[in-house]
Amino acid sequence: MKKVIVLRHGDYSRQSGDLSNYGRRQLEHSAKRIEEEHGTFDPKTWLILHSPARRAQSSALILANHFIRDGIEHGADHISRDGDLSVDYHRASRAARRIRDERPEIELLILVTHKPELEMVMRETGVSGSCGTGCYITVDMDKF
Image 1 (tube, rainbow, N blue to C red):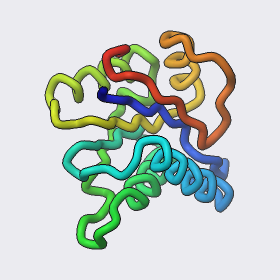
Image 2 (image 1 turned 30 degrees about the vertical axis):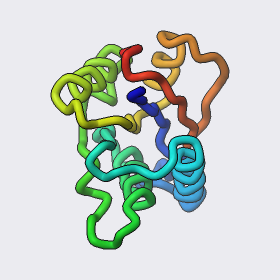
Image 3 (image 1 turned 180 degrees about the horizontal axis):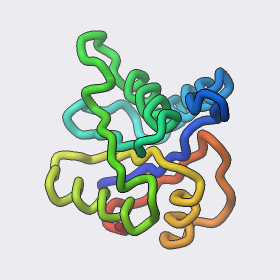
C-alpha cells in the first residue's frame, strides 16, 4: 500500500530560520525511525516535498541524504519545493493527490511541513495525539 508521511520540520533558530543543531538531530532520529518502520527505499519509488521555508527544506535534505546510501546520488534529487505545503491541509492534500496521479511509481511520499498543516492532516485522517518538531505521522495515500 502506498504511504504518505507528513512530517513537521525540526527545531529551528528564530534568527536564521534554519534548523538548530537540536533540529538536525531530531531529523536524523526521525529518518532512522522511518527507515525502521518502512525499510529501505528504491530511489525510484519515493519522493519528498517540502514547504518553501528554509527549516522545511533543510529537514527534507537531511531525510533525503539519510535514505541515499550509494554515495552516487545526492538526496536533493529526490526533494522538491512545494508552496502548497505551507498553506493548509487542502493544499497539502492536493499535492499528495497530484503525486499519486502523476507519479504512480511513488510508493512513499514524505511531506515536510509545519505544525498547523500537520495538525489539520491529523484531524482529517483521524490520528489523535500531539506532534512536536521532528514528529511525523504515516497515512495511507488513498486517504488524501
